[in-house]
Image (cartoon, rainbow over all chains, first blue to last red):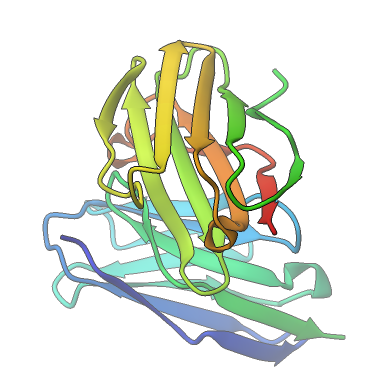
Length: 108
Length: 116
C-alpha cells in the first residue's frame, strides 16, 4: 500500500520569509497530490493540488512541485503572513492517504 | 450550497454507550468519505462510499465501528460500544468523483467525540 512521509513536523518562519514542506511517497502509480490547510479547530481545506502530468503548479503565493522519479512533492509558500499559520497536510492517491502534518507558525 | 453537514458537532458519552455520527454530503456528490483525526495517528480514512455503496472499509478499526449510507444524502458512522480510545474528531467529506481523477474533497466541520 501507499506510504507517505511529511517533513518537517513543525516549521517557524518570520513574516515575509518562505516556507517549504516536503512529502515523499512509495507507490509510483500514485498520480494525484493535494495539499490541505487546517486551522485550529477547523476542517481541512484544499489549497492546491497537482497531477502527475505536470511538474509545478502555482497559485499566487503558493506553489507545489512534483518529482515523480524521486517520488516526492513539496509545498512552497512565499512572502508568508501570520494568517498562513496552520497545520498543512499532504495527501497521495485517490484514497487520500495523508501525511502526518506540518505545523507552520509565522511570526510577525 | 451549505456544504457538507455533520451532526452533532460535539458529543460526550460514557464508555460502553452507542454513538451515532451523521453526515449529509453536498448534493450531487457521489463519493462520501469518513475520516478520524487524532494527535497520535493524524488523519485516517475509515471508509468511503460510491453511489451509496461501501467501496473500501479497510480503515475501520474493528467490529465496533459500522457505517451506512441508505441514500445519496445521508450517511451514519456508528460506534457500539464506545471506548475512551475512540475519542477523536470525525470528519465526513464528499466529492464528485474519486480524488485521483481530479475532483476536490470537501470536508464537513467534524464531530468532536469524547468518550469518558
